[in-house]
Image (cartoon, rainbow, N blue to C red; front, side, top):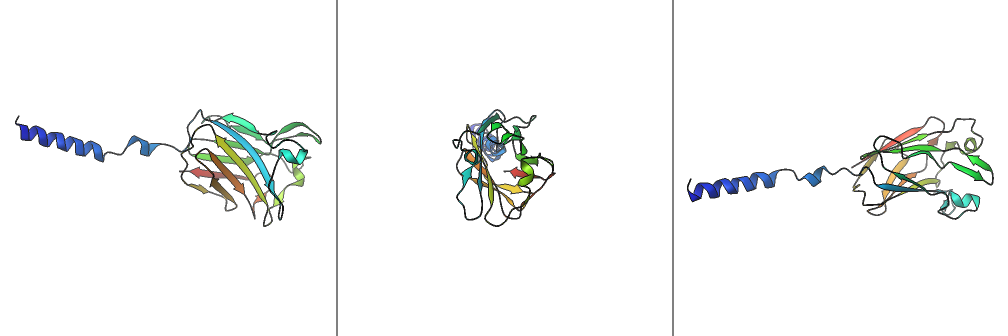
Length: 182
């Protein structure tokens, strides 16, 4: 084989491999095994945003929850549940389940739940329920889509996202929504 053929075949091989899709292009937004910290805040119309814990006179981080991302088990199966608050035990509000490319929220309480029944209803303008998720490593989320027009995702940094529930959200038993991550 002469030098020109070898050179041509080598050049052709380089071109073929360099035109192949890079493995990093297949990176999913989230990685199984990453730790996630959840903090909830609420904001009523014409009021400042405050943490869920502050409603009970607790430090902002008192009700933070931590989980490890698993594609087979819900990370926050009873999010916002609290034992021993000044008003008694509070059952969870949402089952929040992450996968490598999706977040599913399912409302848990029934219509007769003694604590949550007072918060059911349609959100007015200016009301926000925010779920801050802080990841132990960069999340790789660049965009999203939601199947509920009252639910948005905000990317605050490479390790923090915020699921923001707002005006016209119909918070009633049986509601669920999903956010697809890209």
